[in-house]
Length: 360
Length: 158
Image 1 (cartoon, chains in turn brown, cyan):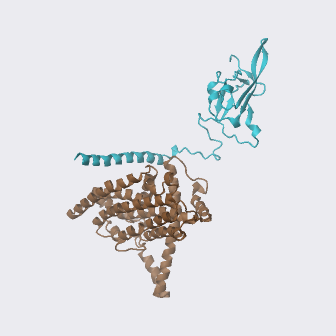
Image 2 (cartoon, helix red, strand yellow):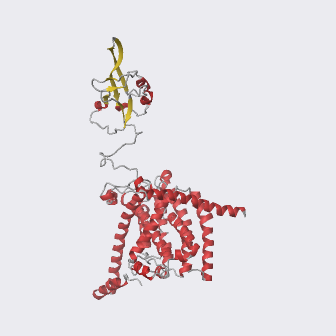
């Protein structure tokens, strides 16, 4: 079926390392390679997403966005990164110095840990736990500890309020993300990412799961946007009320860590959504049209994955630049009075459909 | 029962308003021709300011070097911050002494572009031009004499 398989590549790297090194060294070298790849990917992703965000935002508002640095402003984010690195890392006088310096690292570590579980293509998958979805859900919500520490240690009332709002919001919306993913896990019958993708070979769950799958996807998009502290839910850094929220007192490289983590979190949410609802790297197939399906198979899985992720990220940017920001009570009302009951009924409905075998 | 119906109606009404907002921004996104940003220094040759833009006050002259200003000083009175000064002189026209303008002095540095002088002019002699490149190295260059050398009042304007 799938002609682009990275399993052979990773296997041959592993074998060639095993020939010359001891098993311990092989593990160390492989860890280093994976770490280097993910660090590079993280930085690259940050640069690309910041540029994309600024351009997309500009086009939604009938502007052009960055145009001066490089062709169509493509080197703008590199210039921004150089500026951020050269800035002075300030620490406020009464800040808790240790926690203040620790917070950005907690945020960025949780992001990279979640990024490790992304299935980019067949065989191109750093961590494939049998509880993959649970792992990502657990690890991606670790970041809120970093945000709370940042708000607390800054010794600034705005930072603290921003961090508390972020905590309340994340604890609430984690529930909706989990339940909407569970709706599809009921269909797929597994928590492992590679098996969820394999179960979608005949068709993506969003098409095969009837209306409940679509409702789950809508809820996932809303809750996922809230979980990344973006879009209409950016109460944690509501600039008109809280200057910049939890990262008010941060500058230079430590600020850029928070900034990058926010954008990579968006990628992670989009990646989970693409994997669970749109079949990850699975090509688009229509029933018995073998000719059409053959053509679709020729597009490598990694393009399918990134295409789907780009689509979901575009949707999230569309939300952010269309909807006005919610108040904190509206945010909590939306979650506890609307999304959660709908989600529970939806999960029940999906379980019933699977029980009766009504799905395609 | 009513409350449950209201709850469900609320959800669909909310979704409809959200989607109509997204339709508008989506229309903007996929119509890049509507972008209003101007790439200013690059498109300086082709840039055309819109008609209602207030760049500076000019006294219009026709091809015979005639203007429509009678020197009535209505604009000078109307100006809230004294950026217009009309210096008039007496001139013999048809054996009668008549008041004509000597200098129409305009202080661009004091002008707030409020448009009151244009509205108050009874003979429509002055208009706002769309020229906006006013930067100069010497402040005295911002004090301009608007009537051209040797110009005179147009026939029939009183």
